[in-house]
Length: 192
Image (cartoon, rainbow, N blue to C red; front, side):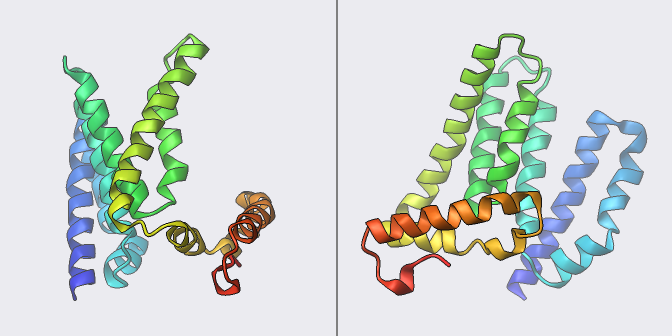
């Protein structure tokens, strides 16, 4: 009940955040856009009905987008941007899938930069803030190298075999196997 209650609460928060985001970005599509998400059977069944925590991840993403959209015409925009990056760091620590979406969002925010050197530098320090927030959240739970393998083995690479990401499955498996052998981990800690 607790998981489903949190999932329901995150779904309702997502509806509110979408309402406010669309009110700022596309006011004429506010009601329809919010209803498309709120009544989406996939969101209702998977996120709320099954109690998946990806609804909380989506809440963090939408909160970051809401703050980004809300701060576009503010004078102290830098603090809003750092807050958005901290929220993305929290999202990455919640689910590593966010590590795939976060660079896309950061690059989207830098799309108007004409100087490529400044754009790459700005991308790097922003991504550094995200990763620093993630490390700060993981730090109290860190118990050495076995923690790293527990985090990475939680990602089921077999689901990605028939996707474009599947190109990375074998190189990542061999990399983590080499690291495990180099660090002399017992066989039960070897990545599969």
